[in-house]
Length: 67
Image 1 (cartoon, rainbow, N blue to C red):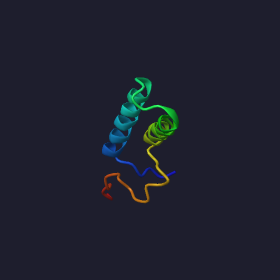
Image 2 (cartoon, rainbow, N blue to C red):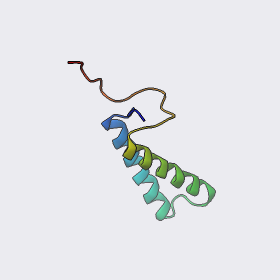
Image 3 (spheres, rainbow, N blue to C red):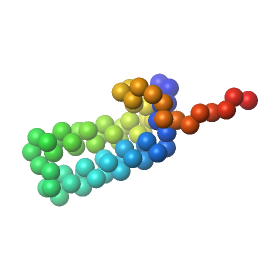
């Protein structure tokens, strides 16, 4: 897998995942919506850890100069 996520993209995904988790575990979001958002948060964390998102469609990685 070719990495296609930059640092900013990964940071935003982790922060959103943390926010969703906090809202879920403090019962601000509940029910089916809460479970769906919690699964989405898990996907955000996993894609951030592997630096690859198959749905992204473009690379948010900074371009590396050729030497």
